[in-house]
Image 1: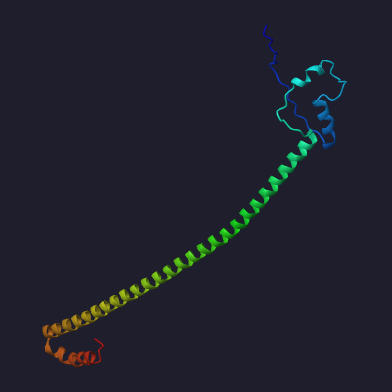
Image 2: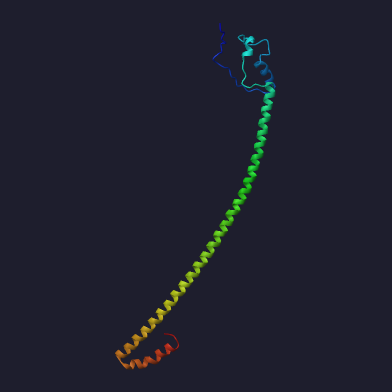
Length: 176
């Protein structure tokens, strides 16, 4: 006849906060090292069937200390990595800032030369406009002179004789 071992369909998990001085007593309780228990339903003959999720030769206190040391070393390692990252980040930030400043200086120089080029072009354009305006004014003066001559011939030569020396003087001194 085959004998089956009855496995229970439940598990007991406890999560409690203990101070380091109380861990040893709790470890003894879990491993059933005491003969008397406050719970009368505990069967010490079945304690060997208990399974622990963490198999270790260390007692609970020693395991907690090793876990805390591992966490502390990881924290210190992360601190040094974080410090390196911050230092590298500061260096990168300075380099990027210098690159941005140099690029801005380059843009400013390009803009200054562009503005100077535009000013020169505007000055040349204004000079051309001024020359054309002067030419138009001179042409207008000559047209006015011709109109006066035509009026002189139209209204009488006597008026032309009087105005002729005056107009010739004006032309001689480039007033007209």
